[in-house]
Amino acid sequence: MVDSATPRAADPAGPATLGDPAPRRVIAVACSGGRDSMALLHATTVAAESFGARVVALHIHHGLSAHADAWLALVGEQVAEWARQGLPVELVHERLLDAPAPGESTEAWARAGRYEALQRLARAVDADLLLLAHHRRDQAETFLLQALRGAGVAGLSSMPRAQWRDGVCWARPWLDHPREAIEAYVCEHGLRFVEDDSNADPRFARNRLRQTLWPALMAQGAGAETALARSAAWAQEAAELQREVADDDLARWSDASGLAQAMLTALSPARATNALRAWLHRVTGRTAPATLIRRLLDEAPMAMVARWPLGDAELHLYRGRFFVQARSKTTSPERTEALPASLLGLGIATPVAGPRERFDLSRPGRHAIPSWSGAFDVEPVTTGGVALSALSNVELRRREGGEQFQSHAKGLARALKKCWQTAGIPAVQREGPLVYADGRLLFVPGLGLDARWRSDTGEAQMRLRWVPDACGSRMGSDVAGKSGS
Ligand SMILES: Nc1ncnc2c1ncn2[C@@H]1O[C@H](COP(=O)(O)OP(=O)(O)OP(=O)(O)O)[C@@H](O)[C@H]1O
Image (cartoon, rainbow, N blue to C red; front, side, top):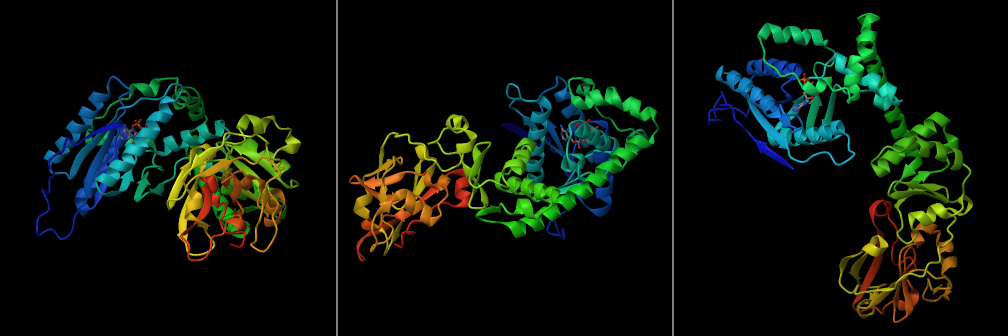
């Protein structure tokens, strides 16, 4: 929740007129009101004037400090003063109205809210360049903090010099500059700025580092800061290399159906780990915990069929491929964990006879079935479908064992389990609901329509498709009509 306002300093160039050749480029500067960002705002504004660009200072009011209103006022006054002097600058600010959730880190909450607001505001003012005032000491501190957390090269890379995010380039032009140079600039131009009282608060890790470790490091000689910042740059290169190697390896070993298990033994351990981590990040959007990666490297190379918990989802291994799928609601997490490790993922159905639910699936479109974490897609077809009338009152049931399914019109009904095995359907993709009409099995996820229900050509008919939620739908599931229909 935010409250945006634009105490607009007069635009020194005035509104665009017919004589203007092109709209002026907009550069956004993230300005807290602190010394560094006030200096960067001033330097950018002066430069912008010389090449005809416009500068928008973006200030985020976190509402955390009793002085926050005063900081905003100071930035507003300074910007208004420069604008009166004819400099092309204005201010846009936004107030974050919510607060950290109980137990949430205040620092992390403020950073996430600030970044989200800065990105949105930059786009709103048409800026494709957003400048931040981090300097070399900030970079050196970030590197140290990451090292103290045991980060890998991605974390040790610290802050990138420039990074595109959704149409906006976030850049740190002073990342190689010492803070002393900025202090000198501030003195030279007599700039006003605020001192953030929270910079002294020892509850924040960065402040503790500044107060304790940093003076000791500086006592070793002035080169420490430069050396740490250089290490961050080396880590950036290494991280880039890791990404490129992972891209190459995944192009070879993965596709839409998942990741090949053979990769784990074909590549060197370091390279396989790198590709596995990158693939998990790609399919889940999150960094996989180091414990999971270690477990996978130990357990997965020799496993036949297995699964591992992965946040809200599960990582599955079946017939030599890994894939991620939403955790099934039919097998509760507690139950999964309670199964002996040797049985986990062996495709042993959990014989829980659950409630039977009735649905009308006769309308075309997507029918969400939350109790099964998925949906049925219903689509009119001219052949190979099931009569519309059969879908108006279907019953969804769990598998109870002993079901018979007929894949082909000219074949015989066989044990459902055998049909799944023949079709190579992984255990996890057998967990959708079985569809019954008039008490007879009509549709099975992974196999499709029972051939005995195939409609005559010419009759109004539909095709059914079961689509699991979340990652399940990304990885695809079941295509109706596999039964040859
Ligand atoms: N409230 C804010 N509004 C807009 N930008 C911010 C805000 N806080 C930080 N930034 C941007 O992020 C950079 C780094 O943040 P950091 O918290 O280290 O800076 P600061 O100590 O608040 O101020 P400064 O870097 O200006 O001395 C700032 O230089 C500025 O570009």
